[in-house]
Image (cartoon, rainbow, N blue to C red; front, top):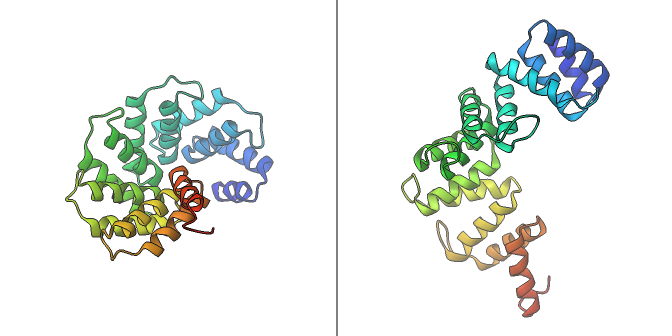
Length: 228
């Protein structure tokens, strides 16, 4: 029945999905509880009900449902959905989800370790989790891992690895990835200096909303150094 419920949800037949998830949730299905909580949280097929969402996420998290752990962590991280802001609780839940191979949780754990939020700052552990998230296709993780390699934080400084990480982030369409890769080409780090590629990537970053890149492009235009 869970497959039928998931199919209905993916088809945006929220009424059917809600009914099926509700039935399964009452029977103790942690995955259904997680999905139903998400529907309550986002008013899909039902009225928004943060209390019900929190109760269901908590219940499913007790059963160690990976995405219940992650979604509950987000609530504590931001102090929303009926819970108080608690970075320590958020880190604990993100870590539990990361250990169960939830890529965005791996990224959040890495970010918290890098910044020392809810945990002791640890760059090498941050690098480990960024790499795990990146292996699973998390584009922002590639970018942040690239920064660690560029600065030598928690890893041996390595421009070649930094260049590769920024390339993956850029290929994924990340504005910060375009910008960071452009800097590598501009400075000739991890690659041959190529001012044309650097400018092209800066343009891409600007068009994707990167504010510093926008300022650079606008400055070059004002100086008459580029036409568009």
